[in-house]
Length: 101
Image 1 (tube, helix red, strand yellow):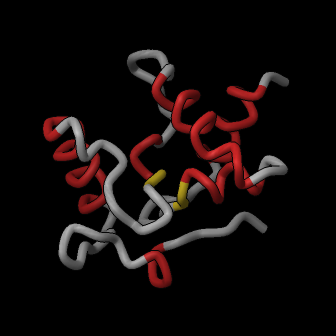
Image 2 (tube, helix red, strand yellow):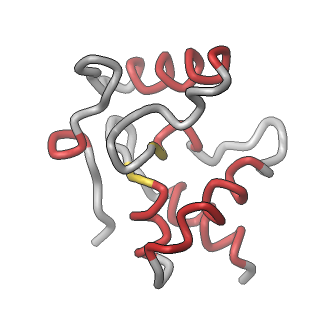
Image 3 (cartoon, helix red, strand yellow):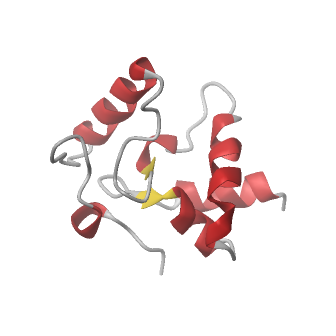
């Protein structure tokens, strides 16, 4: 299984209403230093994918697309539809963060 496929499998396991950080996904895959590579893998998702990319945030709980306001709005809307709350533009990771079993 390729690295991308492994990233997609971890991200697909995040339940609705929960989030993970890029580094946390990397840690599940064996190294928290893979956060940037996790981001690259998610950025290369094909259009129409069912991988819930929007559930992956910065470790601080901030939206991942702060430099792209349109995508950030989409990410926030998708998370809010799932019941994820924001406090000052940040998701409280202690409340909404998720760790696979």
